[in-house]
Image 1 (cartoon, one colour):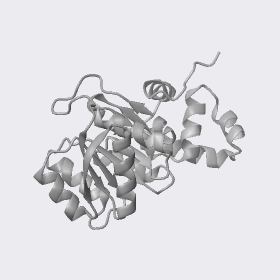
Image 2 (cartoon, helix red, strand yellow):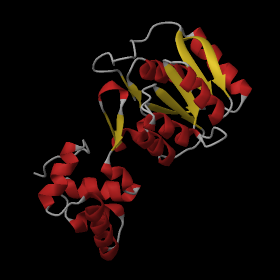
Image 3 (spheres, one colour):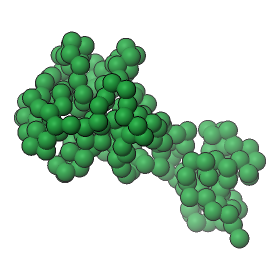
Length: 231
């Protein structure tokens, strides 16, 4: 899921050919492939490269870049720590984080650290180009698997929602209860015993600060979790 900016962000012009791009990845072959892909798509001009976080930080600190593609496993302090350091220093450089990790955990950590986009390194070339375009133009890119767990904000910012702390089963239970099912009905759908369902409900309420039934409904509506009033 890619989203463009609501308005052209200050300091980051809308996408034009020949943008200044930093490619931060341990492997020279990966950097070369990304450079060829982005240049061929008209996204980037000559690309700066970095093989570790020390080199990446030096390049980002010494010259302005329109976009940085950073491997989450970059040698040194790691891509996430590098990103956090950039944001702590006040850098607004758009960052698309690359990863080989499956599952939502690393993507959520990347957005918490201030990434504007996150995508798997094995994504098809058109998807990588689209993600780079979206982030470089001041928007964001969120994998479909994370779309329900984050909120897109103006100027390419991405906020991790509180319900991202729930397990997959807890998230489904939240939706069912917010949709008007009784605890017993929801437990039956999820094949949970009564005691286990009650414990799960209590954990959700504690994590999200939900007390009354209307709190659950209000939360689901506010966060786009598919709540519909029960007839």
